[in-house]
Structure formats: structure tokens, C-alpha cells
Image (cartoon, rainbow, N blue to C red; front, top):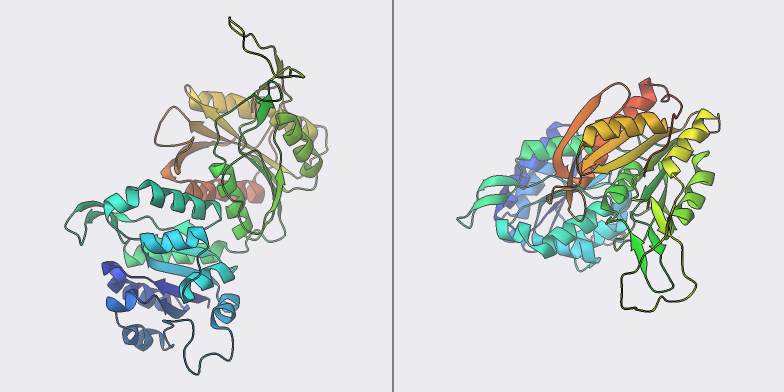
Length: 411
């Protein structure tokens, strides 16, 4: 039996949290409810107390309840923090690190997995500020149960209604089952772009927000793995608990990855590493009247280097995974990339679509291995990361390493 803290915030769908609490109990979990002040306007605390047989926590300091510092004591004992429903306001507080009530303090204090089920007006859910907060939380390892489409309390029809209680309970169960399943494994992840200097002022680089790689690192850490994240320059915060190594160029990323690979059980190369780098000028290139021609030198192919190391016996038990960002012939190119580089898995992305990939908070992919190809439909990057690690887990439990590399390719 797991102990779950169920956070309830102020929205009309708060009544569904009662069914969530019942469902969690039926699944054998012990539930402690934490309500914001606004939530008590929609559902009475006595309802949850009658169901859970625990005192409902509604404020940080309550008479007779301060033998321990409440949010710290609860944070240390729970196996999961589930917030259902979660308003736009609470998402903003979580993302910004604001701790002005028990629930926000609990979120900051706990190291347990966090699952959030948002509900709000469809325009609010689509607003850039809310999307950025969701992206920030996803990069930190927070899981989401996406809101559903349908008739909203405000009279609108669209995406924003709280997911059904059964779906929320099932997501909580999956998260608890995954927790610590990778304990003892060492995972190395690369993420973000690389920047290749033209001169002391200018550079060229690949498009990458780093969100997909950060989501992979967060998911591996949540499963209990020891995670090292080698990151190019990005504007997002790293997941809590990972060992972060910051790099800038393709050469620096290679220097960070290769020595650490031998001590890793899994290497996931999600970074958008530059295939070519300019021959750097010592001084700033002054503006002239005509065009500027740059001489570009080929960078080392890090994924191919890893495949070659394994073929030579240096990485006998390391599973290798890479990404292929393509705009055409996506799966055929991914097949060839996997074969040529001698790796176990290629995650193929179609980056020609505006609703996924670069700078989007959703993604879709095809997971290409020697044995099969599996479609991952459009979903949050956190959910794509879970699908990728689920497939890696299957490979580690059943399949041997891929054949030796037969050639090169691009990262």
C-alpha cells in the first residue's frame, strides 16, 4: 500500500476529486487530502475526511497539529503527490517556486513523484503562460493527466475539463509501479543544441529547446536511476536530482560523453549536435560589402563513436539510443542511421510539423529497433519520454546489443 497526498484546488471540477480519492482507496492506497482555501468553497473538507478517515489539511498552521512541521513530515512519508484538480494558478505557483500555503510548500518539500491533472477554461489551457508553466514542470519531472475535451462549466466547449477519475487513478497506479524500477541503473543523457563559434561574437547552431532530452532525464531519475545530463545551452531548469554537466560546442559535448559512457548502462543521445563547425576566426569578422563565405569542418559523430566503442568491446553492456530529426523520409533514414551507427534504438522525429518537435511542448515519434518499429502518437514530451524508456527497458530485459557499426552519419 502506498501513501498518496491528494491535492485539491479551487475549481468546479473539484467534486470529481472525491471519486479520485475513492478510486485510490479501492486500489489499496492510503490517501491524505490537502485542500487550498479556494477548494473548500467547492467541496467541504468533511466529505474527504469521511472517505479517507484522515484529517484534511487546509492551512499550514492548525491548533494541536504542529508537533512536526506539517509539510515536511508529510513530504517525507508520501509515495506520490497527486493534484486533481490543478488550476492555472497552482501550476504557476509550482513552476515559480511560490510556497504560500500547505500544498505549494508540500510540492517544494517532497521528493516523491508528482502527478498533476489540470482543469480550466480552454483559452486558459492554451495560453502561452500556462503552456510555459506546463513545460517547466514537465522538464522537472512532473507527470500530467491531460484535460479532456467537452462541455465546460463556463459554457464553452473545448479542451480543459478534468480527466475522468478512473483515468487519473490509473495514471497514479502506473506512476507508482514505475517508481524505483530503474534503481541501480546509470543513465547518461545528452540534450539541447550545440553552439559553434564563427568568431568571438557570432555562432551557428541547431534548433533545440532541450525539452525532449530533459524529459528523458527526468523520467529516468523518477524511475530511480542515477542520471547524468550533458546539456548544451538551454533556457530551462534541469530536473531535480540529476548530475548536470553544461557544455557549449560539439567538441565539448563529445569530451563530456565519451569518458562517461563506459560507466553507464544506458546512453540516450537526444542532443542536436552540430554536424559541421566553422573554422573560427581569432577576431570579430568586420562587415564587408559583399557576401561572407564560411569554411565549415566536419565535427565528430558522437553516436557513431559510441557505436564503434561498443563494437570494439569498450561498452559491452551499454544500451545506446539516439534521435533522428528529419523533414522527409523519416523512418527510412532512421532505419539506416540505426544500422550504420550500430546502436539499439533510434527515435525518429518529423520536425517539419509545427505542432511537435522544436519549441513545442508535444512530440510524436517512431521508435526504430532491429526487431520492430513502434509509433508514439502526438502527446506531451514527458509521455514520449516514458514511451522511450519503456522500450529501452524491454530491450535491456530481452534483446542483446545491436550489430557493430558499418559507417557514419549525423547526430
